[in-house]
Length: 332
Image 1 (cartoon, one colour):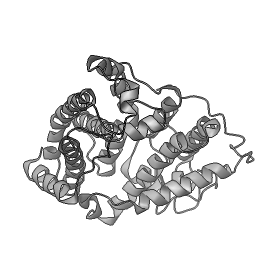
Image 2: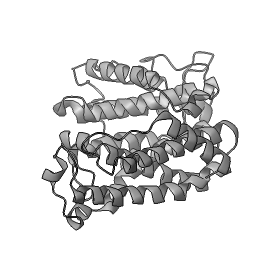
Image 3: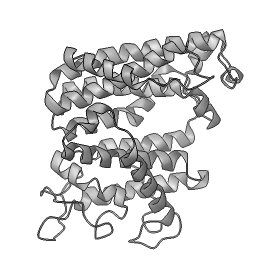
């Protein structure tokens, strides 16, 4: 991805002077971090050691912040807010966390900040990140050697949402998932210290499947936001129009389309699921939890008769727990 020059480096969206985060960015990221911390993690994640839970909470806070900037902020402010978030991320990777002696050292490259695992995040605005949600990433980034690119990709996905509201082909949609979903899996592998090229390949399949499952659950919600993720070529194939997606319940054509798309997602998930068998301990439990959540979500869509318009299909906790046990034990 080619980095765009941040447009809000010198002044925030609300006119904040250099060295300060804009007021709107502070509000959005603070709310997003609070929501991420309060969300119910899958059972497997809630049982993880505290260090992993803290790192994952920081990552989710950042991802939620990017999503909220791209979805909930006033339309005119969205790109500037995303630029501000990227500029703050650049400060984290340029200067790194503050080591024990209080001296902030540049990293020398844009891969992993600093050379000293931090005891805590650098103080926001102290020659480092100005947004607490970015500063909160410092321990995870330094201790787990998380590269910058996955975070940049998450921001870019939200930029793309401002310009692209329809996808002509499934291939185009997969390109979007490469930015919006796959980076999360790669970050998780780094958090657990198990990132390898093969695991990343399998993780990408899992994360793309999870993103697709979420899109198929949220067809009605996405349409209200002005977006359609169902590929136009597939809608045409099944005789589905945008008016059909705005109905209170699914037509036979919509149901057939959703069944087709969930089958694609299930195939990708099954292809990537063997990543679980390559892992042990906490990493295995966490990744099995993601796979299980995806399978349970797809099962919920099927149980609704593939009518995702009448109500949003959500799996029950028992189904998720059963899928988790099965996935953890089988390793796939």
